[in-house]
Length: 192
Image (cartoon, rainbow, N blue to C red; front, side, top):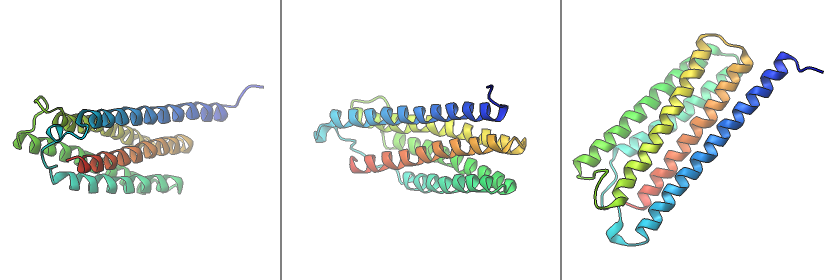
C-alpha cells in the first residue's frame, strides 16, 4: 500500500532531522579533537601556554548566546502553540542576538591583535584561540542560516508540520552551538 503524502513528508523530515544530528555529532568530534590537540600540544609545559588573558568581551558574548538560546526556545514554544506572531518576534530576536554574538567574537579577535596575539606565531596555543573561535563562528553562521530559514517559513506561512520541523531542528542546532561555546569558553578559561 502506498504511503500518503503526509506520511511521506514525515518520513522525509525524519531523515533530514537525522542529518542534523549527524552534523552535531561530527561537530562535537571536531571540537573534541581540537581541544585534545591543544592539551597534547601544551602537555603541562608552561612555555606552550596561551600566555594571554582572554578578552572581557567573551563574557558579554557568552551572556548574549545564552539569551539567544532562551529566545530560540520561546520561538519553538510559540510555534507549537500556534502563536505565529510571537514565533516571528522570537526568531528575529534570536537572529539579532546571533549577529551580535558574531560581532562580539570579531571584537575579541581585534583585542587579540591589540595584545599582540596573532594567528600565525611561534606559540601554537595562541593560534588555537583563533581556530576554536573561528570554527565556532562557522557554526554560528550555519545556525543563523537555519534561523533565517525558520523565519522565512513563518513569513511564508508554510504548513505547520514543516514549520515545527524547521523550528525543532533549528532549536536543536542553536542550543548545541550555545553549549559548544560555553564548553569552549570554560576550556579556555581553565587554560589561560
